Structure formats: structure tokens, C-alpha cells
Length: 95
Image 1 (cartoon, rainbow, N blue to C red):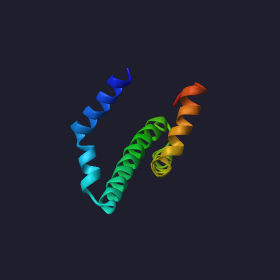
Image 2 (cartoon, rainbow, N blue to C red; image 1 turned 90 degrees about the horizontal axis):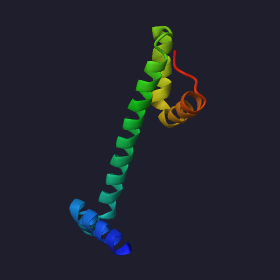
Image 3 (spheres, rainbow, N blue to C red; image 1 turned 135 degrees about the vertical axis):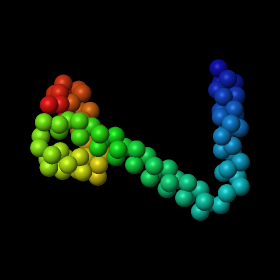
Image 4 (spheres, rainbow, N blue to C red; image 1 turned 90 degrees about the vertical axis):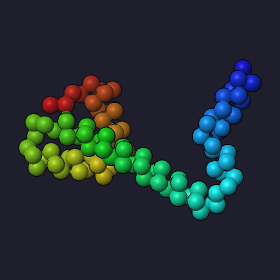
């Protein structure tokens, strides 16, 4: 089983050229790749939370819908956790 896992890891490294990337680029270049990856993930999470907040506040007035969506966009990680606990686990549905 370990041999199959090692073979899989080697294939992934070869497929994405990760080993070559980390051996040929400077630490500063690697840093910027990490920064851009974090920014991309943050934008994706923000858009997901914006969509969830917009859908859950359909009955509210448009001003309240916009305010809640902005708050969800800015604090996306917290809003997604709130949504998971309050809406999914506790069973409280959106309006």
C-alpha cells in the first residue's frame, strides 16, 4: 500500500511539476505564489458567502439585503461558519 501511495505522490509531483517549481524558483517567487493563492481562495469564499447571504435575505428590504451581503462578503469565513451551524445543523431555514 505504501508503494502505491509513493507512486501516486511521484505521479502528482511529475504531473504538476511541483518539484521542479520549488527547486528552480527563488523564495520570493514562492512567496508571491502563496499570496496569490490565498487571495484567490479568499475571493472565492467571499463570493460564496455573498451568494448565501443574498439568497437568505430575499424577503428583507433591499437595503437590508445589501447590508447583510456586504457584511457576509467582508467576513466570509465567519459567515460560512455561522451559516453551517445556524442554518444547516440547527435546521433554521432561510425566509
